[in-house]
Length: 352
Image (cartoon, rainbow, N blue to C red; front, side, top):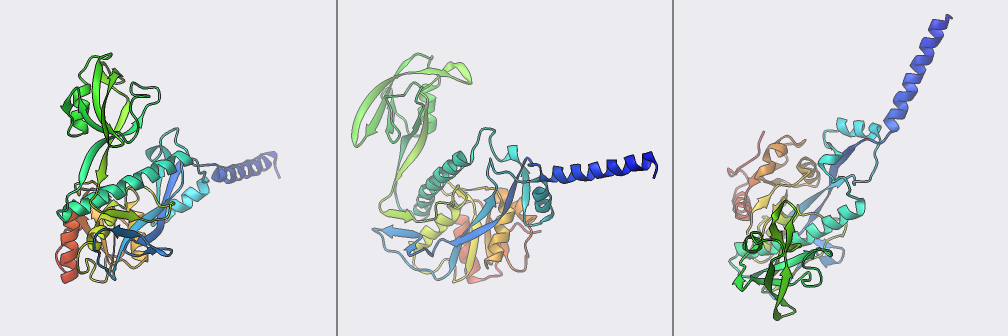
């Protein structure tokens, strides 16, 4: 064998080894695959997932399923080979890492954020369900977080209810921010609060806003504290997080508080964030969630309207599961009632 032939064989061998090693290298991608679904009208272990205390409830023998996805974490490594296998699977989505996670995000911080979003979505779902039923509840502006090195450190605490700025009532977060932002940095501003049932006033010296040094801020995050006329508890596994179950929580609470069956005894699934006023928002992993819902027997899947185009491209059988587009909780309720009465009823879809 000539020296050139030997060199060529060696080169091919090195290329093959390099390719093999390359497939074992970590890839900068995140994998989304179908996860479990949970009947929110059912039980988690020996406890009901939703319990209502102080209000009559009604049973429904159907299922309203929240849907989940398995997602590789911000610090989870997967090889290029695993990524290529995932790319070839129509039930799996692969996205660039930086389109899903922040640069400094860790598995722990991601779980903490997801848990906080889940808690918030449960309150929003209760508010949306009560709003759909015409049941009044209280909504207060409250401190969510205080920057430990910011203007409000030692003066405000998470949970403080925000009542006024310089004696003028702050009806919502926009009004509160609008009262402070135009002030010159270094201005002393009086913030009326309620802490533990006691009204008081604190004086805070504003600091420059990071995006405009001529404007002011007091370095807090604001949220809404919702107080309901009866107690609604949601008992779900800690490993399920995020805001995407909001719509299904709201539908389940509404169903439990109304006579009759919203499901008609059928299996219904869906995914979407929910705002306290009942607006359904888009979520991630919609394609994988539809696959999971079909796998677990759902006949109807409720999709936030902003997710409709992506949902239509999902790997599902339109003869087994029907996609229905919703914008508000009221849309979802009306669509379910129409479908219960007539499974062939015309409904706004995300069809192919």
